[in-house]
Image (cartoon, rainbow, N blue to C red; front, side):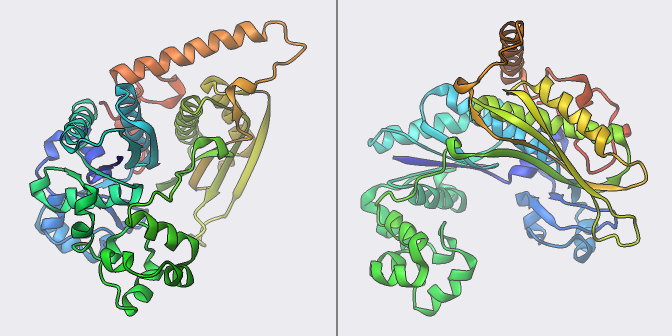
Length: 416
């Protein structure tokens, strides 16, 4: 059966890994900005219990935050991606899940060739316990005949405490389950389609499955038909693999502006390190490295500056040292000290499979050097996988800096 894994309150759960003293208290993660604005991106159950919701602008709920002593933490996307990769690594190492893929930073899909529902639940419990033990991130799991049904099962696992975080949806219980879930809660039914669906008298997921395929196609097109088939137990969705990916981008909007070149280099080096790690996981290489910088376009009282530049590498690589070196060169070209930067990013482009590398004909030591660097990168990945995120890292990434030297809103050191 297809399986779906969803991390619970992921952003907050990641923050609590390094701040366990906050467990049991209301905590929210927000994209706080220079004017103490921003919105709530994630929150734990304790924060929900005091009346906060995802999407609340912070300036509208100061009384609730103050009255209930809610902790507001700036968003740290880099941390969340690193923990997401760690979850991927841990599950893949078990070899229990086939075709295991990351759908989003906090969601994963896979396949377990097991029809015995009791055994399937035991396997999912093993995976759930493993993720919690290795990363401290609680997850909910679902299993069904299709990706959509597996994700629907996860919805039940999260909303019905009796499932204890795991729901397996057998074929003979599919219609009973779909009758209990609103069509708006089904994966694949977009917000723009909800009103159209409900005006047609379709209230539940089961109602949707009972509509003729021609009606679904006329109303919602090919994507709607895929969802309709999946809900009827017919696999129709193929999750995009990495082979068709043309680039990898890490881009962040900072909570607070900075004109510090050293801060920008530290953040960009972290982005480059994460991007090249993703390259190695995909057995891919990049031929180009692009860096871009931008000021805050909403601050018209400040000078505006947006720039980007690209370096084409002599040989495609997945070597973090080569990419960070390119980033350093690009930052020297683009940086202007009289501007306050709000956003920066790294793009690795012209990806190709690692087996298709073409070496420089005129470089006699290239094969030897690349072999050494490959072993170095593999050793770093293995150590970090075993002992925790960024236990081995490059000095330019700045993990040994005092936390007080880092402006609020930028990535701070987190130990796992």
